[in-house]
Amino acid sequence: MRRSVEVSGKTVEEILERASRYFDVPKENLSYEVLSESRGFLGLLVPRTVRVRVWVESSDNQTEKSEPIVEIKKEQGKELESKNSDLKSEISDDENYQDLEKAREEIREFFENLIKKMNINIEYHVRENGRKVFLDIDGVDAGLLIGKHGETLEALESFLKILLVKNGYAHIGLDVDVSGYKKRREETLTKLACKMATKVIQGRRRFKFEPMNARERRIIHTTLKDHPRIITYSIGEEPERRVVVDLKNEKRKESNPRKHPTTRKNPKS
Amino acid sequence: MKDLVEYMVKALVDNPEQVKVSEVQGEQSVIYEVRVAPEDMGKVIGKQGRIARSIRTIVKAACIKSGKKAVVEILE
Image (cartoon, rainbow over all chains, first blue to last red; front, side, top):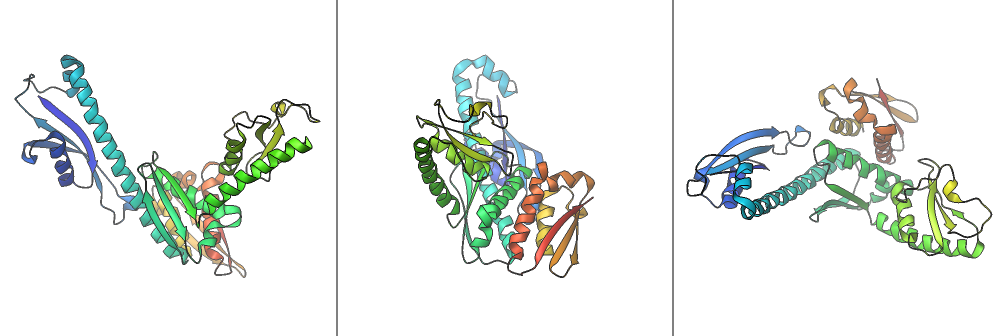
C-alpha cells in the first residue's frame, strides 16, 4: 500500500524529518518528489520554500497494489477514512503554523528594512498567537507612525497586509498597533458611543459622528448593536463616511433612516 | 528617502527590476517620480488608489523629520 502526503517546508531534509515522524517509518524508507520551489520574500536572504510529495511503500497491509490513497479510503470504509482525515488535518494545522511563522518572519524582515530607510527611532516586537501576526511598535518616534487620526498607522497596516497577500499569505491576519493607540481609541470610541446613545435618547435627535474609517465605525456599530432603543447606520462615502446614531422605531422629525438613499443595510460598514 | 520609495514599490510589484524612481528637488518639496512595468501599475495604485495612498502617507510620515514635503507621483 502506498501512502503519500504533500508538505511544504524550508528544505527537503526538514520535510523528510517531519514525514518520517508522521508516517512513523525511518527516513530511508521514504521516497519523495519535489513539486515546486518558491522564492523567499522579495527574493532576498530568506530561505526558499519547497513543496514536496513524500510517500512510503509498505507491503504489510491489505492492499498489495500501489494505489492512490483516495481509492483505498473508499474500499476500506470509514475507519481508515477517519484515520486519514485526522492525519490530513494534523498536517494542515502544521502547515498553517509554519505559514504563520513564515509570515511573521517576513513582516519582521520587511519592517526592519522599512524603519531603517525611514530613518526613525522606534522599537518593535513581532509575535504570533496561533492565528494572527501582531506587530507592536513603540519608541521615541512612534508618534510619526500613528499620524493624524491614526492615518499613518492605517496606511502601514494596509500596506503590510497587501504584502502578505502578495507573498501568498492571504489567509493570515495581521494586527499593527503603535503605543497602544488602537486599543486606546477603541476604549474611547466605546465610551463615546454609549454617551451619545444616551444623548440621542434624551434629546430625541439623531447624532452624526465625525468621519471615521471602517474599523472605527465598526466599533461604534458593535457597541450599540444590542441597545434596545438605538439603531446605528452609516452615511456618505469614504473617506467621509460617518456613523449616525438614531432612535429605534420611535417618532422623530426626520423620515425613517432606513429609506435614506446613502444608507447601507450592512451593519458592518 | 528615495530608497524608501523604491523599497516599498519593489516589494509590491512582480517586476522589481523595472522599477525606476527619480527624485526632483524643489524648494520646499521633493517629488519622487515612480515608474513601473505597465502590468504592475495596478499593484502600485490599488483599488481606488488605496495602495498609492498608503505609500504616500508612509513616505510623508518619514519626511516629517527632514522638514521637507515629499510628493510621490506614479507615472505611466
